[in-house]
Amino acid sequence: MSTQTIPPILLVGLGKMGGAMLAGWRERGLAGAVAVDPALPAAPGPEVTVVADAAAIPAGFAPAAVVLAVKPQNASAMLPHYARFAPAAVFLSIMAGRTIAGLRDLLGAPAAVVRAMPNTPAAVRQGITVACAGPGVSAAQRGLCDTLLAAIGAVAWVEDEGLIDPVTAVSGGGPAYVFLLAELLERAAIEQGIPADLARLLARQTVAGSGALLAASTEDAAALRRAVTSPRGTTERALAVLMEEQAWPALISRAIAAATARSRELAG
Image (cartoon, rainbow, N blue to C red; front, side, top):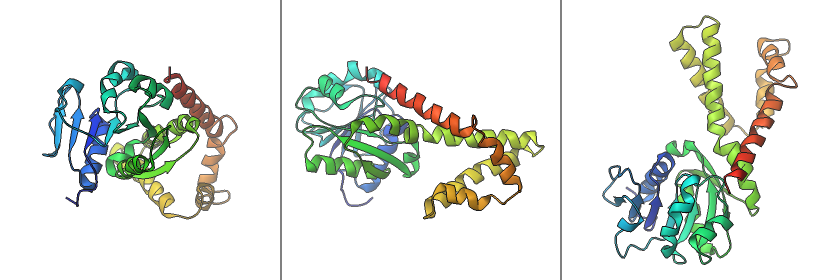
């Protein structure tokens, strides 16, 4: 365990993303945390206390940040129970669609709110999170949120909160699109007669290796694609199908637009 760099945190929601964040904080040196989850999962370490609801939070616990990692549909019923921690703590929300203004309506006007959208590669500390600070968030509070988010991967900040909705569509949901690609590659390989176990290995390692190459390269994705595509070769033939006008270019645009619209709907 490293030297403590993370002050006491109140984590509301210990699902996959909340659990990934908590694991990242513990690796950075967590001074102490209370996690609220009605399922009462086992505490991941001695510095973490797990309770069933807001009423069970130990008296006197004073978190530096309250991290909201619950489903956006549950926000209206749950969040008012945490208003008592404003304005001393900053609220860091990773709930899709829920706006800063809407969260402050539930938590009270004094609440300092940061809205963020991470993604599931946070589980292996390879996530990307985009965050936006609301009114009244101090430099120190923004810095703390940056530290909390950096424990699970890269962090970028935007001033325009409206960008969080398309960010949710692109990077928040993006891992699902990549996993779908691996799934379809595996299926197509089997259709061409490749044994199932080899098909899965080919699909998974191709997606994982390509991602690693993209991360390591200074070239953009289009240049890397062209480098794989020999004139009049097999890849060129496949790309001619995938890049038809109504194929991948149109479908990806439609998919991101649909997800962005849904993120905006969740604000209601």
